[in-house]
Length: 560
Image (cartoon, rainbow, N blue to C red; front, side, top):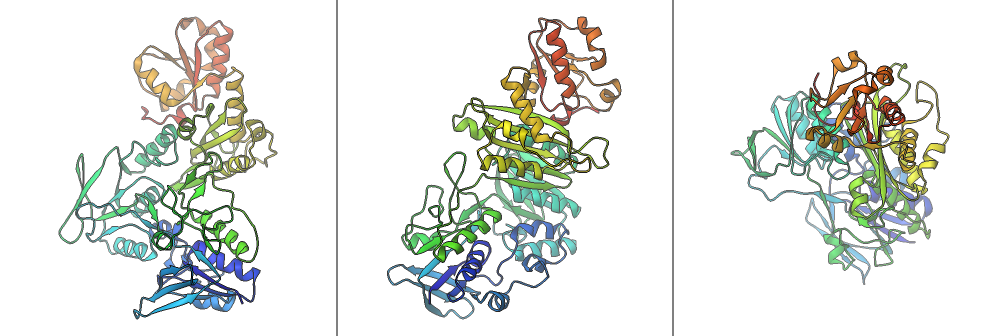
């Protein structure tokens, strides 16, 4: 009888154990978990705090409402799950794991034929004065989520400071503003979602967050936490922020101490090195989840990218291979999606910053539009930024943001990236169409068309970041071709170098513009701006550009 031992009882570990059981009904499978609870959906914790999830145990239940306890796994999967049992050492020669029973302090050894390390990661705790004060949480365990929600419902928390504007930080910003707390987010880098968004897309999300009452402090560094026993303020290098609740969301480090002590190879990312079959440098030891490094499928580089979705895939691959399979995990695209009230932010593949760092010869295009026909109830705007290889048209990455349906566009591009597709493929895909769901030409296909037009020299678009520089230097004429009523509702500014000529009047009023000037045309989404480019070039203008995404995608403040 094969003896399989799994260290770690959350996503990757229990997925591997369950899959191995399907492959080998006779194997002895033991799962070691040092905590009291197992197989919980950690990614759902912000939504429990925010009130979308009513009971914390819902994060630990099957779809039919059964708690995934040790008894559940024994009865249904025939897995021996030992909670409050910590693996303290691995003897690779003797092929045994030393364990400590945390409730009693007793130690024991458990033999294995095959071993799985799924020890996950731990939140980064900054070595700052006051970090151990009460009411400073990392939201890494359901117990943290319970304490935060209980404090909110008891009226203990009014002013929250979140350290870090990544996925967890911004998800918690949503949760706490929904609970009517005053929320400040402090981020030491220059933008929110710094790990995966380019500046113009992050700017759109930042503007929305500010409208929802979230105070964003970027390029600001936390120096200490103050208070007697409980936190009362956060001090940065620029100010003091009152706080009775602090959320630390500054990232995670892989738990590799056990693997390192056993002589397993640790990579440059700080995580465990595994091959395509999730095997470590010991052929009888596999590893998966947040403790291992992955390969980025586009760059070929090793990355530390902890995600619940990836951990579950790792577990399935490991489970197959424990039973003699040779399934390969091919890597990640760093696909992410996040919800911020009614806004969705998503990304897959390389960002423009990534492409530049890798030395790619790339081209980008940013387009805005409704997620379904404008005449349909519930149609909402989204902005898509597409990045492609200039010579081949191969899709390199995509980002999207908006109150419309973003996630399915991210998934479409992720599929194209996985298959090595081009902008032509992105246009050619026969996507579903009906007015309640989509426009005749999907937003990502429109973005692909924009890249094609750029490559063909038919569309001379510039990003909002470049447009902002040109607007401020005063040497470029900005041509707003919207209707007067639209301009009354919202406009870039009252800058002297903005000219207002509705598109329908442009052909008759073209003499009001100087052919020697650089002209940047735009409208609500810059589709009419593109038409204006054609009109002006047909009239002999040689330096006409279009502000990509228009007013909808302008990441800076506007006048109303």
